Length: 327
Ligand code: GRE
Ligand code: ZN
Image (tube, rainbow, N blue to C red; front, side, top):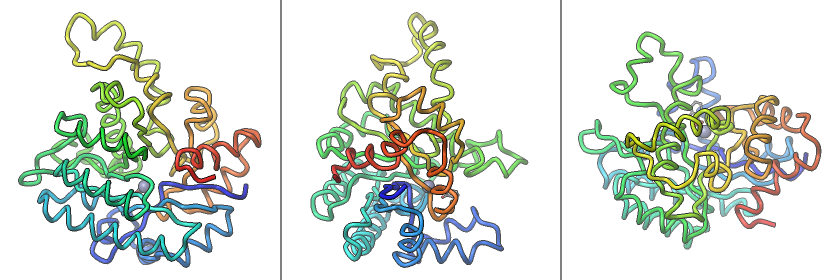
């Protein structure tokens, strides 16, 4: 399919690229590193070869979210966003930007997103999970009340917020002790991000901000498959014993009304078909997760998946075009 739009697509800067080394084998690191640092040429050639017209680019993970010092986080976010804006400007018509945000300080995050959208033309934010605070052991999840003014501004700017994975801190991940393969994309990323998304939905955030749009990668981090069970349990458990679910609707309703999922890094046709059936084809967006995944793998799979041409056009382009106001 020609004209695809992809939106979980990463780059790195010289001082953030090393954070991705742990996700690579030694054999592949030189290539992954150069693809992360490549602003343009390799990326664009891959896009041309595989029918991707637009790529929304974002900084690698966890970077800004792993800096407990709010001032340092603000400076890195600003520098990354300025660098990304320069890349995007060089390829107008092909590249768009997602802002990195210093969530350590909700006011600074609000100001940076506003600057990125209004002055740099960015189309939303990509935030790498919880933010570390204090001495680095503090965790901020964005359902906390201090983030509500931030969310109201995201809603009013009418841009999506992409919640991207990061690993849990080791102290919070004893279940993975002795099984390091479970960290990262194999399991921990999805587990961490799914729970964060559930916190956002269950907090009532989307009742207060009904126009807010959240994006989850990796086919929804496992959530579509489990929605029935989450809502079923919640329907009879929460009411009389105070389960801390102030939200007005079910998780399924928020997933269908406020959340988009992308195909980034999850190229399984049965999973895609289940997601279409559970959420509807208008909630799903094509992405690759370059350069942690190959554009060729993502696009070859997607272009051939047995979902029908009209559905393919919606997921491959039209849903994202509508979300970003592109066509
Ligand atoms: C990602 O950003 O999506 C990612 C990583 C590291 C490994 C795999 C992966 O940052 O998908
Ligand atoms: Zn990613």
